[in-house]
Image (cartoon, rainbow, N blue to C red; front, top):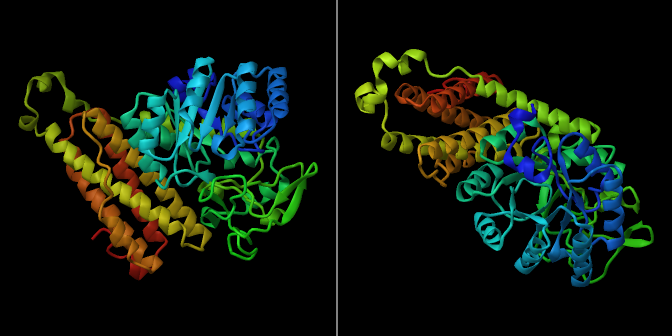
Length: 498
């Protein structure tokens, strides 16, 4: 398992599997970081706006438990400058191995941490932001998709953003946003990411500092229950969006979030918790938890129980390794196609019936644009669904579509091509269909188009690795066509491949 999942970023972080605990403010403390480390992953302490005394105490607690490699996550834009300065000095004095930064990062701060010998990771929400922090000297990029719980920086889905950033940098890229299980880890690794950042899945653990109310709300939620809102804004720059579970605040039942008056709805050791603040319910708090920010990513529907963090990390890693090993073991092109007797390496591709690079690249990019459209359609459709079974089905197909985006991107780069950044016209056509069953029928027709393209393309592909990937993609689409058809009324499912 470790061999299958190992990526160079593991050596930088000092972990055995590329699973990273998000530096969630208030929630990610030493108990959770230590448990994630025990499971083989890496953890960030979430220290946004926290006093330096707590940073010292949490770092000491980790080191007392033998945890040598960990990070401290700070948010300059959400922290008083004097507090931030004290936090930076504390990290330098303590010799913190890695500092994570997010949201309008001052580049002089990044340079200062680098000068102190600290590895710096930055979370970004766009390709342009990734380019900027790389030029400023960051050593690890965290690409955050719009599916993420908590504060969301950009507006790009993860399956678009990660391959785009990976294609432009030599730095290790971690993927964050809506990830919940081993299939998600395998998917982002197929995109070219070197690891995955998990938040919601690790809130639902005994070791997280989240209040039990928050944990229990996660267990009963689905991805469609999350919303992006700027209503929770106190302590952060105005206009900053967060993804939370819908509640009385997001429904507008608590009044104007931007009114001048402030209402206290909770307490933490004598510190007031205000309505519309970015505080989430913590163990040490009392108050009206329902009206607080209940952070959750779109993968929340796959978190169904409270599990020890080390066990959850091991389960995620085990599932991802099994999926990747199974994919690697998929049968490659028949031996006779590469028989030495044919001397194929000395012959022209077109003479042998194989497509040239110039023919393959447009075909692969056409498929990539179609898969990106399919991934967006399935994700958008799940937000409109009410039935649990159909929602789970379309979410699983969304994960498949996102995975194939990554596989196609890898194939295009293998041919030294440039992956298209476009989304196929299928997306707009599908989203113009309001009836749920009619849209799913249209989705199946799109899947059928991909099947026909792949069947025509596969015999022309010489490269065994690309052939194996596209053969697996074909089988996946054929399987998903059958799954969707089985969930549609008989009159709707007929002719799904026409």
